[in-house]
Each structure stands twice: as structure tokens, then as C-alpha cells.
Amino acid sequence: MMVILLNCVTLGMYQPCEDMDCLSDRCKILQVFDDFIFIFFAMEMVLKMVALGIFGKKCYLGDTWNRLDFFIVMAGMVEYSLDLQNINLSAIRTVRVLRPLKAINRVP
Image (tube, rainbow, N blue to C red; front, side, top):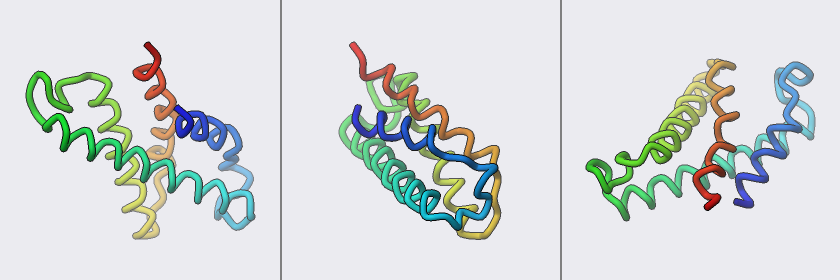
């Protein structure tokens, strides 16, 4: 829940129109936090896949919320792979807005 809260704060502080090339200290710090959040969610996904299995009714992809998590993490992987090739697709970055939906699954 703390990482999801951190994600909400960093998304609120992110200003894509103001610093397009991410040259300011603020943008670089937010990028470090975003990298941490992505790694945390990716590791959570991998651990769940190992613990539950990947396919089947009671497995990781059998749950609708886990499918959403999978989609968000895969979109993040696409974003990072395109950043490495100096291709920037802002539409993929908008998927980060879906990350707070993970909190819905956490609240009983």
C-alpha cells in the first residue's frame, strides 16, 4: 500500500509538458522513484507467478486483478525497452495512471 501511495504522489508531481527532456533535478528524482516502483511491481508479479503458477483457475492469470497488474507491468516493460532505443511513446506512459487501481484489490 505504501508503494501505491508513493506512486500516486509521484504521478501527481510529474509534469510532462514542463520538462520534456527530463533535465531538471525534480524530473530525475521522480524518474528514480518511478524506476523503483516499476521494479517493485514487476518483482511482485514474478513472485506471485512463481507462488500461484501462471495459467489456470486458481493461478496468477486466473484472477482479473492480476491480469490488470500483468498488463500494467508489461506496458512498463515496453516503455523501458522503447526508452533504451530512444523511442518515446507518451501513450504508453499513460498506463502508469492505472497503477493506483492495484490499491482496490488490496482493500478488503
